[in-house]
Amino acid sequence: MLGSSLEWLKANFGTVFLILLVAYVLYSRFGLFQTVAPEDPTAPLKHFTAATWRAEVLQSRKPVLVDFWAPWCPPCRAQGPIVSELSKAVSGMALVGKVDVDKESELAGRYGISGIPALLVFKNGRMVNSFTGLTPGDTLRKALEDAAAGK
Image (cartoon, rainbow, N blue to C red; front, top):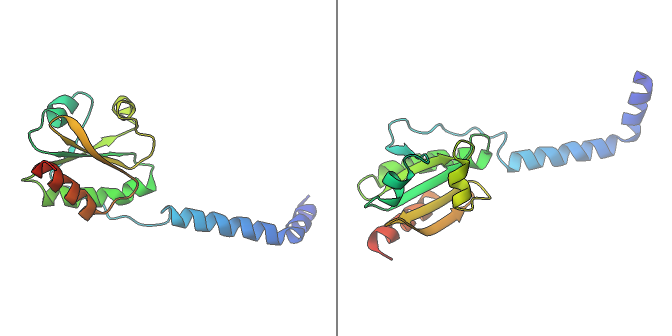
């Protein structure tokens, strides 16, 4: 049995090598082997739930950035520290928080979240901007500044 397996491996070495190479490139491209800095526990970052959604997001007087994410999602884990830093930078002007799509699937469904991370900007109870995928902090900050200015 072992002999036939080794013969098969020798005969198909190129194919096996190519498959492993492609797998490595795909995994490394999507961040599975990257270490991501943890979020700052001192950041004024909210964790929104269906129970707090209306009061904290829809009735907020400030613009609100909501990061729809999941702990198993590598781009979401990379987005986390960006959102955490942004929450500190805009704390007087806007509110920043997260929604775990696994725990709050009803909220994700309500806003048609089909890809994560998904970042939505709300102003006066309405969504005014959205981003899907890993998004730079400068882009998110500008969206919040525009929302605060009424643009």
